[in-house]
Image (cartoon, helix red, strand yellow):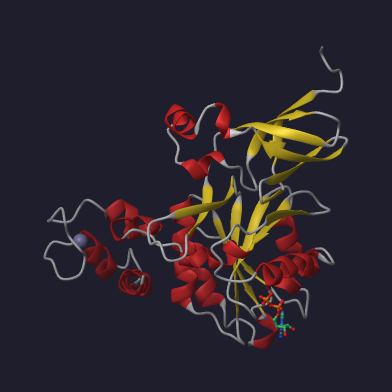
Length: 315
Ligand code: GDP
Ligand code: ZN
């Protein structure tokens, strides 16, 4: 017998994921979903049918899904629509095991502070490289500009702008850059990352009171370095869009980039890759190295070249 209360959602956004339960907003309110049991197909069958690894079959926040809604409140996720990017972290202890924690992220906002603590460029570079590797556009935000003299950040901001990254100079004390940040987050799904103490919570609170506290709460309550599934959430913005948070996202910078892919994560190096005299050039001492040639001609900055190799050594 057909049940008229059964409806479908063609493009349901997963806003909360954890412990086999997924929240998907619909016009009438939040739908609490489970996933269609894999037992119907069998694990191996579903894996080979879709050519995906097992965890790719489990929805994560940011996933667009097909949902069958039963009684206006509960539903079943029938399928995950193709992901256009994914945010991962490595599973603790297992070097090459990846856990997807969010999908279809529009941008990552990398926050550092002008002082207390001051910008660590190797760390900033690492966040940017991981964003490139994940296929997620990145924006740089330098907070606490009230602590340094005017104009002292122009050089560092200019360096990242010339690579094509937008740079927001901000201060939660003076409200500088808050309008710019608010506009940037509007109607997008964003992840805000950066070392602790740089002012991420206060920046989010400046954009929307309570938001930074909510995001911070989840990070604090879910604990660090756990192997177990952690809940992740997309927090809605009043102006449209979402800010994503999960304990795993704080480890974002620590996702290993395979060594042979690292140089590709430095966008300005792309045009020179494959042009070295030796196909297996490590760009350190070999003659005819196109990357070092570009550094000496100023097309690649010494700084970025150095950071690239520091990441290669330090991982
Ligand atoms: P989070 O760990 O990145 O979330 O950082 P918080 O938002 O908790 O802020 C860390 C510290 O930096 C707090 O003591 C804030 O008062 C301070 N702080 C945040 N934003 C600014 C700013 O724009 N200027 C100054 N001087 N201090 C700030
Ligand atoms: Zn080379």
